Structure formats: structure tokens, C-alpha cells
Amino acid sequence: MSSEYNRGYLDMELLRFTTAGSVDDGKSTLIGRLLYDSKAIFEDQLESIERASIKKGEEGINLALLTDGLRAEREQGITIDVAYRYFATPKRKFIIADTPGHIQYTRNMVTGASTANVAIILVDARNGVIEQTMRHAFIASLLQIPHIIVCVNKMDLVDFSEEIFEGIKSEFDKISTKLDVHDIRFIPISAKLGDNVVDRSEKMDWYEGPTLMYLLENIYIASDINHTDARFPVQYVIRPMRDEFHDYRGYAGRMAGGIFRKGDKVKILPSGLTSYIKSIDIFEGSIEEVFAPQSITITLDDDIDISRGDMLVKEDSMPIISQDIDMMICWFNEKPLILGGKYIMRHTTSDLRCVIREVKYKLNVSTLESNELEKRIGLNDIARITVKTTKPIFYDSYVKNRNTGSIILIEEGTNETVAAGMII
Image 1 (cartoon, rainbow, N blue to C red):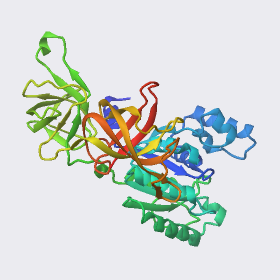
Image 2: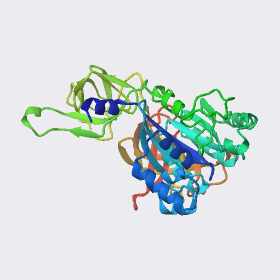
Image 3: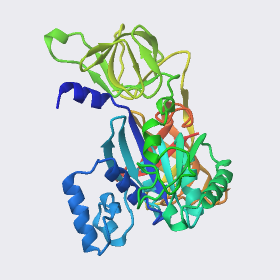
């Protein structure tokens, strides 16, 4: 493989998408169909699922077996854990997070969807919009996934009816008024037969929109990242112990938002000191500007004491600096939340301690109603809480920047991740 090809592949735009839907709506089959029809399956994988399909006594290839990787999943015919798959077409690279449909795996869906550009929500054409559809649409909205594609699946089982498709579309549109999502698309598909997944359906000539693959390859995602407010959390300080780099002090990390250019004036938090960008370095050499989500090393004109957890910003677009944080959380642990309990908070590259001060309400994800009387927060619950940190953190609201507006909570004794949070 040539170096030009490698460079081109690495420079290709990456789209992350997640699938969600009720049990047996065909999420795993849809992903299998995407991989199969886009020629992204190795021959040994294909032979393996062919053998597994024959063993299960099925006619044809069961494409769902491509993603149901755990033995327990194959035996039960359901998806339990988040299954990640990677593939590429000439236009884009893709990371798929196939998430479970059951309510008891809400935390798995939150994990899989937290970095997604697109959420594909499957609806069984025979059942229409159900409670699980509402739950998954709300979680996609809560996680600020910018684009939702509603795939009305199993159209082959309703005679490819345009009327049924339009009815489901109208029903979902009513739900969407409660969601904070601005781009919702609808596609009628049959994942099992491949209609409108990669290839256009001859049986649904009434549908004039794009296929799912065309949409995934062409949907505009460059504006999904906040390129206005410059944020650079310092991950590591580089001090080479060699004579030729004797005075080199670089600050390595990944841009969490905005753009920095060589010569820009920056403010270092929490110290509040200012300096100018001397160079922006990558492996191949120096570049003139950097934008999220690139990983780089920055050097400054002044020798300032900067360490992991500090953040470089611009004075005209400062983040919020506070110790009192209001957030929505999804609880991941079987041990319930302890009011007044102490946890480690991980925010960007910073670890600090915090105390849970208040549970404002618990959310009923099925009805989207808030219960202010319910204070017990257990596994898979979603709630609004306030915490107080031991030192100020610099953050943006999750709506404004998913990188600087998200946190995880860790139990001190066990080092287990107990919650993911979206700062309000």
C-alpha cells in the first residue's frame, strides 16, 4: 500500500454513528447489510456467519451475526453490549456503535451514543412509534447528537406501503417537537432484503429521497464541532532530554473546540496568565493553524508553569469557571447514587473530587416527565443533580461543546465509572 494511499485514508473524514431501536427492530441486521453490501466484510467473516446461519437452521445468511459478537447475544438473539464496527468507503471512514434496545441497557446506549454524529433509530413498520422509540429519541436529544435518521424497517412485511411509512413519519414528527434536534431524516428500508440501505429499492419507487449509505456518506458534519470557542486542555508536558531540544517545552493534547493559529494570544487557566503561541507542532513538523479535534503540541513565547488539566483559551471567548455544577447524569452502577457522597470527577484532562449536593429530579425516560419527589437514583436512571467540586473547573454547557460539557463520575474506593454527565 503506497504512502499516498495511507495518507489519503488517514485524512478521510470520520463519521461516528449509533443505532438504536426496540428489540428485534433489526439493528444488527441493518449493520450487517451495510457492511455486506458495501463490500466491507472479509471472506473468513462471511464464511463464519454462513456456517453459523446454517447451524441455526436459517435460510440464507443471517447478517445480524456480524455484530452480535458475544456468545450470550447469539444464543438469545439480542444485542447486550455495545458492539463497535469499523469500515470505510471511498468517501468516508465510519465507526458504528450498535447499542442494545432493552431499557435495562440504557447505560450502554448512552456510552455508545456519546460521541456519535448521527443516530439511526429503527422503527418496525408493523408496530410504528412505540415507547422504546420515544426513549431512544430522547436519549439522542439529551446527548446532543446533531443528526437523527429514522429508518422505518421491515417495509417488506407491510407490502412496502407508502401510507404506513407516511403515518409513522407523521407520528414521529409529533414527538420531535419535544426534542432538541434540528436535523431529522426518514428512510423506508428493508434491512433483510437490502432495500434503500446501500442500493435503491425498486419496490418503493414512491420514495424519492437518498439511500441510507448515500446519506451517511454525504451528510454534512463539519459544523457539528464548536469551531468558535477555542479550547485546548493540556494532556501532557513534553520536555525532551536531548541537547538539540534543550529548551523545548511543549504542551500536548487534543483541541476540544475552536481554532488556534500561530501568533494567537492565549490565556492559561486556572492561572489567568497570558502568552502567545510560538509554534503548533505535529509529527511531520510545524503547522500554521489547528482546529478541533486535532491532536497537536503547542509551544508558547513565555516560560509558564503549565501542567496536565490546565486549559488554553482565548480571552474573548472564556469558558464558565465554577465549583457548583448543574448536570444531567445517567447512572451506570448497580450501587445507587449517594446524596452527599464523594466521587472523583473526570473533566477533559482533569481529575478532581466532588460532592453530590442535590438530586433535583429523576426523569421518566418513557414519558419524558420529571419526578422531583424521587431521589433514589439507581442503575440506568437519568436525573438532574448538582455537585460541588474541590476546585473550580472551566467548562461550557454540553449543548455548546460536547467535549468541555461532559464529565464522568468515578467511585473512589473501587475506581469504577458510576455515571456520565452532561453539564447544563
